[in-house]
Image (cartoon, rainbow over all chains, first blue to last red; front, side):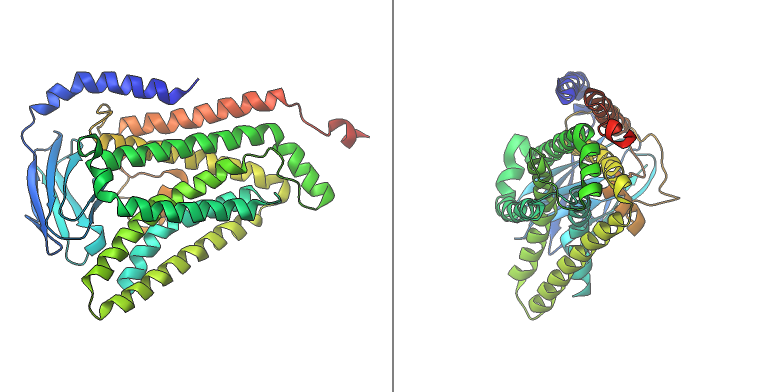
Amino acid sequence: MNPWLHWLTGGALAAALILPALAENGAPVPVVLKDHRFSPTEIHVRANAPAQILLTNSDSTAEEFDSSALHIEKVVPGGGKGIVRLAPLAPGRYHFMGEYHSHTAQGVVIAE
Amino acid sequence: MLATLLIVFREVIEAGLIVGIVLAATKGVAGRAWWVSLGVASGLIGAAFVAGFAGEIAGLFQGAGQEIFDASILLFAVVMLTWHNVWMAGHGRAMAREMKQVGAQVSAGERPMAALAIVVGIAVLREGSEVVLFLYGIASQGGTSSVAMLTGGMLGVLAGAAVTALMYFGLLAIPAHRLFGVTAGLITLLAAGMAAQAVLFLQQGGYLEFLTRTVWDTSWILPQDSIVGRLLHTLVGYNDTPNGAQLVAYSATVAVILALTRFERARHPRPGMVRRAA
């Protein structure tokens, strides 16, 4: 017996129940990465509600949206787009960076 | 160069620790060097492929391809680690005894070395693909700094290899009759941490969206992005702000492995009791 099967089935059911509620939570916040810098560098989201960032990578090389505070590691290929899903956050500031160009690619999510 | 070294080291360290644990867990098994090398080599080849097709992978599953991919290989590694521990529960005592008595290498036999080689391969693939993407980004920018940065990358890989050696020799300092018990414990927590990480990736991809609230926050004592935090994250799945689903996955993995190993141990009664009494 595979316990993960139960997990996935349960998860799929739960997701089906919860997803419609999430869809009402506003459009993704657009963020553009260009010359290894995020723009805007400050992203405002509602506290205690799920949110999404639509990251457009305008550089030719891949970048990883990395944040240990947000627990996110999302690779966005050069010239590609990626959805970064944020779990409901307590009010506060959450630092993130582009891991492959961390000297320039820096930003913060502000939940309020 | 130093920045590159640190970034590459940070990526390599996870795979390095896992290889170190696998090497210690397979002490005395004939042919293990071959298996582990096979795991590392296929992991490297896989890493190049994953990095090369990063765009294509990311585009699958409505943009959640990377998350599904990461979660799948992590869960596969969890199954392999579970298999290893369950197998060892049945055969480990006899092996430890044999090693102690003969003092020589025991044959691999039906030992699930393949399972551990796969785990090594997955660890190398996950971290390696990020290193490849990162170094590729540097190389494609050209300029004079490329050589220095690639040197930094090489040094980062070497530093990661040093971590493997430290982990391995550190574990070997444990007395032989305790070694397999310790590595089994480490592998259980490693698997649980991977399962929790897989849940995180699924949530990141927009699946399993329940119990997503943070249950506790220990970032003020031990931030996860500190060195110790990162090490513990790799080894035992430390997370400074875990959410409910991750905690459930973590505990369920530990519970399943313990239950299966206990069951397997019961099927193989303690060997050598009679001989030891004689």
